[in-house]
Length: 196
Image (cartoon, rainbow, N blue to C red; front, top):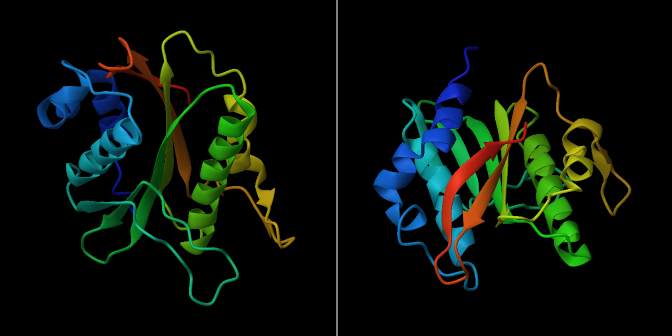
């Protein structure tokens, strides 16, 4: 089955920011405040908007995913992209803040694990998993490689059930680092760097 997600389109958008500039100019020029979930909300909706620009695809923000006959927990990825013709899930995405605190590392690990849970709930048929983390300029994401190993190695759920990593013959993953500039009152996200 031919893939619908053109990763080069997604990667080009992150690099150029054309759609970001058109639909979310507040992220590129005046900036937005780093208050509560403001940055998270803009970021996840931007990712959803990218999905809607691809022919044959629709995208939904914060979509609950569960498998009725499965022991896996319900998860709610920030963005889920679907095939318009048959509602087949194509991509799950998360957009999350990064810092080096233990608490935030734990939260990031949970988000990555949730993406893998969604992958298994969708019967391992996703075309792609997208994870974007953002941070202020100058913060080194020195533990990110250890965290994203979950996509390759899998992990064990609290109930003892092991979830394998993704099958790279069928599913790809993309990881990006969005770097915030300016100060807390005027966050701009103009720099989206490919990590993987």
